Length: 560
Image 1 (cartoon, rainbow, N blue to C red):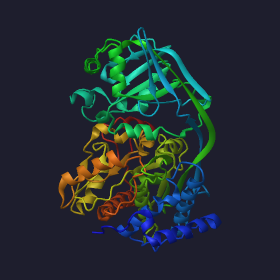
Image 2 (image 1 turned 180 degrees about the horizontal axis):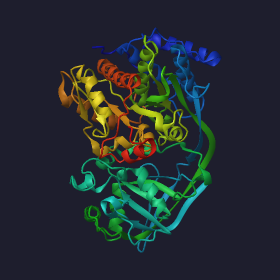
Image 3 (image 1 turned 180 degrees about the vertical axis):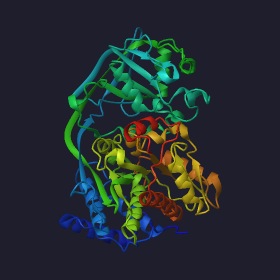
Image 4 (image 1 turned 45 degrees about the vertical axis):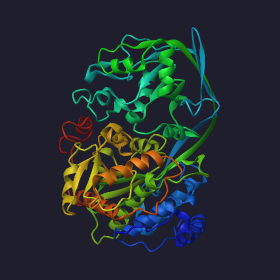
């Protein structure tokens, strides 16, 4: 056990000294000055890498700007020291053009009915923004309509917008999907969230329907996070890729409202929120107009910038055009609203620890005696927190042809809780990669388990998803569910505490109580999966039940 290897970032003197050297070195030649990292995967190295990336000196690793440049310089220096080749031609960087849209936090949602008018405050009661690249976006006296879950899914015989013209209207939409609400395994996928349950889908579909605006009703259980996450995540600059037409096809106003706000809006129109929420779980649900209109204006500051994907390659000796990908996102939220005197969102678990795991795998592979037959690429994406933007850009502009990309192994949000009896596969039941992983963890005396809360939809919330949608088999790993000596309750409580008190807040810092021994085991398992694929000829396939199998077979042929 390696408990308490790092105290809070500034308490460890060697970290402070190392960072001071690093800043000076990066400004000259991008070489990173570090402690003596071992060629083997170790708990000490994982803790050290995480401590550096999650320190205040990296400013919360925003997707662009000086702190992003400092982060990227550290990563490049690390790959150079390992002797790995640049991943993008002769460059370690792939540039991702971004547009930053920062809404002024003084917007007021005005709702007017026949007998009364109400104003709802930005932050505490609602969050609104626009993804259109404009200095001002607004809706004026837009008729409000409750559209249930806002889903159009022919394969499930479902259309919440059936017979409805959304021109001039604003949709009020429930989060998640009917399967979660009913826990009926025959409805959608039961407790496990489908992509139809994600807020990203809700806004995309409302735009396809021609709506003025779209407001998702927040509830903690189906969203899987409290309102505080909504408030902090959508405050400050919001980044998007530069798209043709400036996102003019999106609705003018997107946002969230508190459940209490929705209940009040429904009551003002003589409607019962709970009754209509229950009705929305049926396929014959009919949209319900509210007796009220919505008006809100958002003033924006626009800025063009770019984020950076960082990539390094261990070139294959026999089939260098075929590649195995390892990935994690290097970015976090930068600086935001102050909490308890701290405004730096350090992102230690999310995702400095995940980056540390990828760097450890890279270090071990770079130092191996044998050169793999296939290439191995280590990808650290930017702007994941802004909607997987770096990953989507890479998927559209891959370093290796996607048909030649054997697999992707991704990690995101890592809690160092000690040695686990298992390792979790988010989206288990997806591909043959799980069989290779099972072989690896069996040799450690462990097992693989499914993510215990599939209703949270984490499979759709990390970078691998951008490539999975293009058919690349993707394995997404997470901290296990059972501590080897402290059991499942300990892990469940620790994860719940992280979501409730630290996720997307300045409190996501390196903790004195963290034990890195389990993360080291998980990293070894990741290494084993990737090395087996890189040394072999296997093309792992999606299982027949996967929605991504048809895409893979269409682009790559039956040989896989």
